[in-house]
Image 1 (cartoon, rainbow, N blue to C red):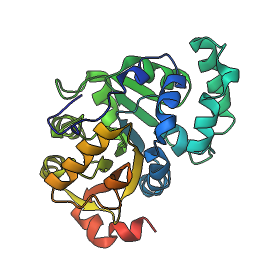
Image 2 (image 1 turned 60 degrees about the vertical axis):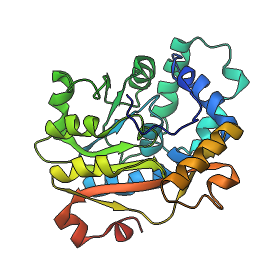
Image 3 (image 1 turned 45 degrees about the vertical axis):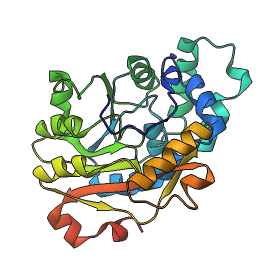
Image 4 (image 1 turned 180 degrees about the horizontal axis):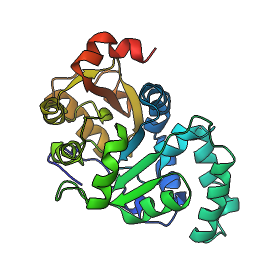
Length: 276
C-alpha cells in the first residue's frame, strides 16, 4: 500500500518481506537498529488493556512482530537474537514456523488478546498465522479496494487498530475502508515518521468521531542506511517546518505517536494520563 507521503530517499526493504519466515526481516533491519516495535510494545499493551477483551487489528503487520511483543513474554531484542542466530540457518521455512509456534505458545501471556493481521505481503501474513501470532490474517490492499467479506466479518470485534511502519505507505483511504466496516469506531494508535503528514489520516478518523492526540516527544525509529537517507530525511524535516538538530541530523529517523479515540474518552482521560 502506498500514498504520496513516503519519505524521499528512503531505502527500499521490500526484499525483507519476501521470505517464508522472519529471518530475512530481522537480519536486514538489525544493522540499522529498527526500534519502533520496542516503543510500541508498552503503548499497545496499555491501550489494549483499556480495550480488552476486544481484538486488535495490526495494519501492515508483516511477520506479526507487534503481535509477538503484545501477547508474549518477549522483547524486541529477544526476537533479534532468535532470528539472527546462525543455528537457525539450516531449517526450512516450514520447519522453523512449526518451531516458532511452539516457541511462542510457551511464552504466551495470560492476558493475550486476539490479533488480526493485515498486510499486502502474503508470505509474512501466512507465516504469522501459522506461527500462532495472528488469530486471522489477510493479504489485502485497502488502498485499492474495500475489505473482503471475511475481513469485514471480524471488524465488529476490533477495539484497537495499530500501525508501526505503514504510515506513508498507507493513506487515509485504508483507514476509511476499515472504519466504514466497524459498527463502532475502534481506537487507532499509529507511529509515524515525524516528517510524514498525518493530517489526512486524522481528518478521516474525525469523520468517524475520533479525536487524535499526539504523544509528547519522539521515538527513535532506526539508523539511516547512508548519506542519501540522511539527506532526504533532513530535507523532509525542514520542509515540514521541523528542526532536524539532535534528531535526523544525528543519523536517525524519528517517529511520533498518534492515538485517536472518541471525544468523550479523550476528555475523560487524556493521552498523557492513559500512557502513564
